[in-house]
Amino acid sequence: MISNATPADAAATLEHLEVLASETDFLSFGPGESGITLEGQAEFLKRFEDPAAGAMLKAVVDGEIAGTGSLFRGTRSRFRHAADFGLGVQKRFWGFGVGRALTEALIAAAREQGILRIALRVRADNARAIHLYESLGFVHEGRLVGAFVVGNQAYDDLARALHLT
Image (cartoon, rainbow, N blue to C red; front, side, top):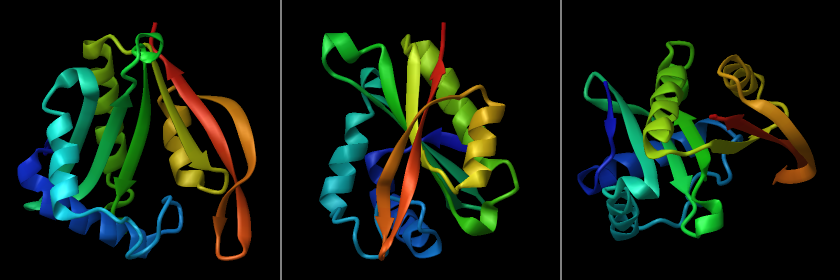
């Protein structure tokens, strides 16, 4: 089931983020590095009670958060047409369509909000995510060489966007 994440989900979404951080190096932070407090997470989720801010969705399987997805909308008038996209699905739910369902729901929310451009960055070696984004129409816009470092290993990020016209 996909629904809006609310401030009441603060603890569960923080736990979800920590699971994600322990399962993959594709996130911008590792285990214990999010630096987000319970209060901070609740405030962050409260922001999305106003649809003009974008959207924060959760996918729940058997009563547990399996994935989250977000659209962060710009606040300045010159950027209101665009949103940045984020997605995270726990490894045990990979291959079941959770990421696709979240992404499709976020694209629908973007259309409802009048968003014309959804942008994301994905690590160049994250083949599963790249395949998902390409299948939904996200196009390659650029390569950020060495933008992502895990340990001593540098990785490129790919800039992608979906244009909703």
